[in-house]
Length: 561
Image 1 (cartoon, rainbow, N blue to C red):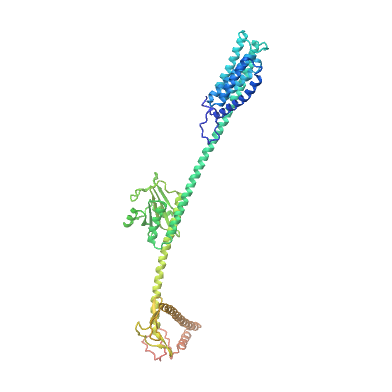
Image 2: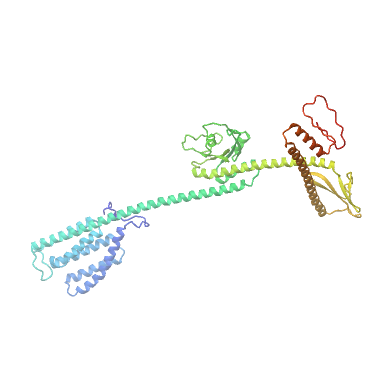
């Protein structure tokens, strides 16, 4: 068989390929159908023609039918079944020619013999079948013309050499046309099938490519989703930390654990935004460098300077790139990415991540990690601002406490120190009570962390014990009393300041009513005497030539020069 033609191949093709044409399978199904039809029709023909058949036909046809049943029912190889079927058709055709010559149905069987040989076998077999048929005609014609053989059936017309020649020529032409048509059909079918197979193969390849792309894209999406989950986990953890050192250490550790990088370092820049100091690291070698005060000095050729100037991530891969520089402190590094820690458009530090895998970072990794770096930078800045706020609050509290102590020291020096409730009523005390600590309950009045007074309570009778609930209640009352006293003091001080400011405003307005110097001095002197209810008031203009003796004054006088 012609193995170069895919139409004649036994398709040892994947059964999942619907475009593959199983020609041998088709031929086996075809010959099985032909054999079944021949068995049915053969039995009917034998039954009909048996009474009028010759002795030879009565023996030949049953034998052939038995052979036909055998190859139809029994599991025999395809080549045996096809060869047997062709041989049987050839025998029937030859028997018809031997009986009737070229006048009845012998040519039909020979044409069937040639067509079946073309369909069931390679084209070389159908040519052989055609030659065998012509040789058979020529042999029978020769024997008949030489008188050696006579047709078995009675009443056969006289057959001349011209009749035989005409018959052979007609048969050859018809058979050749049929063979050419069948072979052209087979070639066209082969070409169509080949094109279908090529198209299906192209579609299969394209489908595999699409599946690969979808698979790769799915893997990328899963990787990105995993990175986002890791980033979210890191962000959620560091957002709860309020200590900068702990925040940086936890950030580098979580980045290494969540993303699978063997080293992550965090650098902070100095005030000049040039030198980067290593503050935290996840690897052992990185922690050792922190203890050595490791820093990266400014250099326009290294990645650190590019990250600071351009404020965008820088990736370095060990794949022959000229910008990849091996770090002796991290010999396992095959991929590296440095990301700026940016707050309000200012770079405050650098996040340095190392991986021992080739091509561990790409633009999408840089985007995810940069988002994480920005969150870390914001967290660092927030903690710094929180620390500064706490320090400021502490200073304000300390100043408030100091001011409260000084203010109340002055206030208590000008007012009565204490009041006491007695059965006769409330009376002032001009000296602090000096009772023993065990005599009654002493509760301090605390204002801004300072003790501005005390509350002393004594029970009636001999019972002097106080419950914790009563002590708490009195402490709350003491706190409210302290606040009320502070509010009262502030109101009094505010009123005095308002009165003072009003006096100053009145004097200023009176003085500014005129531009005459004498009038200004006269008005100022009059207003000062009136406001302070002075006996005398004097305003001198110009540097005094001699020391002026102090003016006489009563307890309400004010001396002004």
